[in-house]
Image (cartoon, rainbow over all chains, first blue to last red; front, side, top):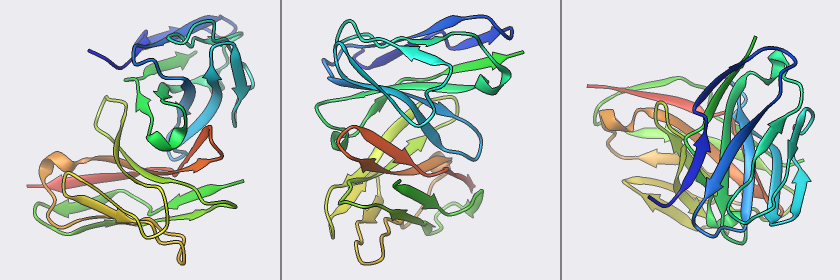
Length: 113
Length: 111
């Protein structure tokens, strides 16, 4: 099925560990973004990309890295996990501009202990 | 920066009741406005959108009208069902690349 695929669905990390959250889309969308969802705070933008080779910071980028080597993939790297990064992470993609409406993945629930 | 304020939840209604979830925004330009819905354990799905003032977005019996004069985009449905139980997010575009979300409103419909 076409859409946005995120892996893993669940992950527990120890403080200081690193990991990569995977995101792939097969709709040839140019725009991709990572959001984190925390209770009572809605979704906050971490990083986004407007095309392969182009990334930029969102509202809460500290502690996260991204790269966009292909149109399809947009991985999110946690460099040294902290308990404050416990959250649900969503990847989303859209055609040329966000006013087309994003397609979201099903999320990765991350717990840092 | 731009921001979205949603009605505090949770909201609990009986089946067939009328639903309104309030959403107001602050923006420097002319954003597009959206409602997204999140069912338990799933990602967000686009419910409806409006791209300019006085536009009405509609889908699955839900409606919202882009009101520039009151900077609002309230979500309404005439008769809710148990299957409408979810978290609803209002959002706006900030520039060409970003979406800004409200905090979400949890809706529970009792049979």
